[in-house]
Amino acid sequence: MSERRGKVLIVVGDASETLDTMYPFYRLQEAGFQPVVVGPEQRTYQMVMHEVAEGWTITKEWQGYKIQADLAFSVVEPAEYVGIFFSGGRAPEYIRYDEDLVRLTRHFFEQQKPIASVCHGVEIPAYADCVNGRRMATVEKCRFDLEVRGGIYVDQACVIDDNLVSGRTYHDNGAYVGPWIELLQSAAG
Figure 1: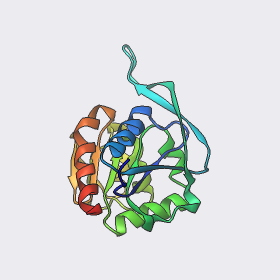
Figure 2: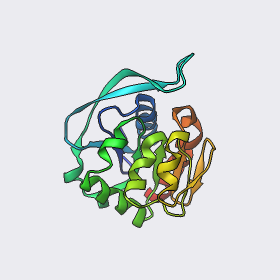
Figure 3: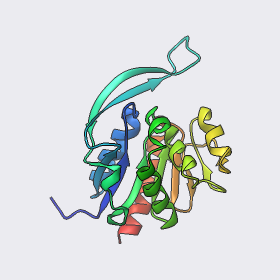
Figure 4: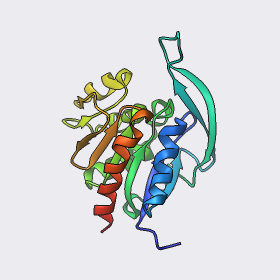
């Protein structure tokens, strides 16, 4: 295997969305980056799959694959990483309060490193007070989380705002992950 271009954080917790997480994980590998999965603790996390099922007006959830966190948020040195990815699912609602995750999130925004977010992932940078004046896509039900912190909601499959790339749901994976990887490639040199 050739030398990797750099390491990229993938933020997860229990109930991270499977497709939100796994698609960028493998795309990073294909592009020559080392994805490093991080969570509140270094352990295995249960992911889920989400869909608005026929006849339902709210999201239905099924158990998905499991994923092993390589590191806990508390031991991550953000300067060692080229970029960060905030996966969706229900996990962001619970893990966003972690002080170490807030520290990591602010580092990537302050240092203008490539950041990607999908679906509920917006709840993490919103809580960390990093979205003021930033244009982002997210799932409609997280629009409030973005706007209450001064962010600008955009209903598009891919929204690029400088170093920040976002999509609404895993249905947008093919639209926003590629441009984010291009930013990572430019940053890695």
